[in-house]
Structure formats: C-alpha cells, structure tokens
Image 1 (spheres, rainbow, N blue to C red):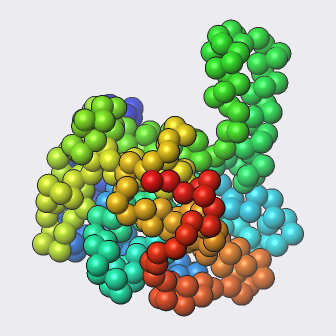
Image 2: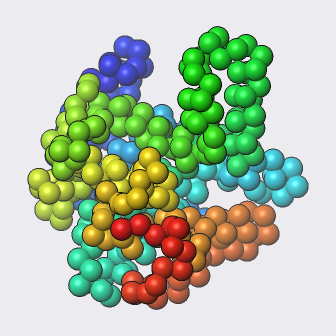
Image 3: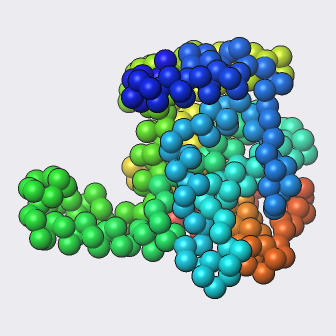
Amino acid sequence: SMSAFLPPKRAARVQSDWESHGFSTTSLKSQSTSLTTRTNDDVHLSISLDPLTQAFLDTPQMQRLRGLSQLGVASYVYINATHTRFEHSLGVAHLAEKLLSSISLKQPQLKITQKDIILTKLAGLTHDLGHGPFSHIYDGELRKQLEFRRKRKGLEDSGLGPNMEEFQEKYKGWAHEDASLDMLDALLAHHGLKAHSDPEKYDEPLVQIGDGIDRLKFGVIDLNGDITPENLITTRDIIYVKECINGAPLNDGEEWIGRKDKEYLYDVISNRHSGLDVDKMDYYARDQKRTLSVGQVEFILIEESFVARGRCSRPGKCFE
C-alpha cells in the first residue's frame, strides 16, 4: 500500500488506480515493454513513456507542474500561451531520449547504454521540479521574502535556523534548481525510496524507507521485459540525474560522480559549452508555437548531433 505517504482513503484510491493501469505498488518487475505507452503533444506529436518514466510521472511532485504556467502572465497578451511546466518537462524528456538514441546509433564506440538514455530522459523530466509561480521571477522574490521574514521575526522565530552565517550561506544564490534537487528526493520518498549517503554504497540499489516500489525491482526494463541487476536504479544514478539538473557537480564539487567516464552526457540537458541543449530546443519551439502559432524543433539538431573531442570553451564549467 501507499499508506505511509497518504491518508487511508486517498491511499486506497491511489492504489486502485495504480493497479488498474497495470502497476504494482511493490514491484515494477511484472511490467513488460508492452506497458510503454504514448501521449500526444502539439510540438513533438507523440511522446513515448516507458514504465520508469510513468512511475516518475505518477507522483505529486511531477503532477504539481500541471498548475505552473510556463510563461507566467504572458497569456494576458498572448492568449494561447497557457502551456505549463508539465508539458515542457515532457518535451525535454522526449528530446533527451531522441538525441542520445541518435548518437548511440551513430557512435556505438561511446557505449551509451539504454540506462544512460532513460536516466538522462528522467533528468529532462525532472529538471524543473523546483519551479515556483511566475517562472524565474520566483527565485529572486523567494530570497527577498526569506530575508524580509528573517529581519521581521528574527532568525530564531523564522524557522530558518539560529545561525546568521548558515542562513546567508544556504540562501545565497538560491535558484529553482536547488529546489528541484530536494523535490527529486521527495519524489523518491513518495515511492518509499531514498539514496544512500555512504559513498561506499553508491552502486547499490536505493534504500527502502517505506511502502511503495520495491527497490530491487525499480529500474530500466530491457527488451525481454526484465530488470537485470545492472539496470536497477542506484544512488550513483540518482546523483547523475541531480548533476544533470544542477549543471555542475553537487555541493560545489570539482568532479562528476554519476557518469564520470561519459562527461558528454551532461551537456544534453544543460549544455555548458554552447548553451544549446534539449531544454532550450523545447521551450524555444513551444513558446513560439503558443505565442505566434508557428514553431517546431529543427530536427537536424537532433539527427546530426555527435560527440567530438575538443578544448573546453569555458574552463570554469569543465570538470574531471
């Protein structure tokens, strides 16, 4: 059951809905590739949703994005600009999968696995989890309000901690990406899972912390409908997703942890070199289509992409 996370009546209803769609609340192993489904989209026409992506979608953290306008109040000027962060996130996930699938076919020597592709897809799906209302304006306004609350009530009564330096350090430069990392943890907790804190266990399956999905059956399903041990989701995989969202190593680190041997994967969601990534490809096309009624992804950017060696154009953004 999901009673660890929801009131009893709500948990029973969610479990019934979950099982009616072929899911098990304790296992993903019973799912086969036939459970991969699709949704229609006015930019990409059709988007594939594999079972793991569906599990991420069926959470309060992802569904929350349905209520967040992509362009804030722009719909008061462009009446059709009512699209949401949810639509955009699905679009980014779709393009991430398409881009890496194309590269893996053209450059098999890179040894991009299906797990690499699906994890990058999930990074695209969850990259905007931490967004608030009114798009990026929220980031600066939240910091401003936190500072106002601290001054008015005092640090002790504000719930922000007793130490001034700790407060300033925590919220200095805060952005929605920081909230996205926390929301990803909450998403996993919704399924009864969390990442290991011990580096020695980074390559082990996730920690089971409650009812939900069995950690030993939470992973990428292969063509036979199975989840092999190497395709189970590990803490290293979750760190990789977070690093993609963050656009840099976590905690101001100087080296990648998730996919250190495939550094080029990090530029799919957030391109540190040219700035052209699948996030921008989607919102350029989507925003243009909803405001001006024309707009599409130039698929040559997907189909003709490849990985090449070169000098880092922005040394401050490159990590070992």
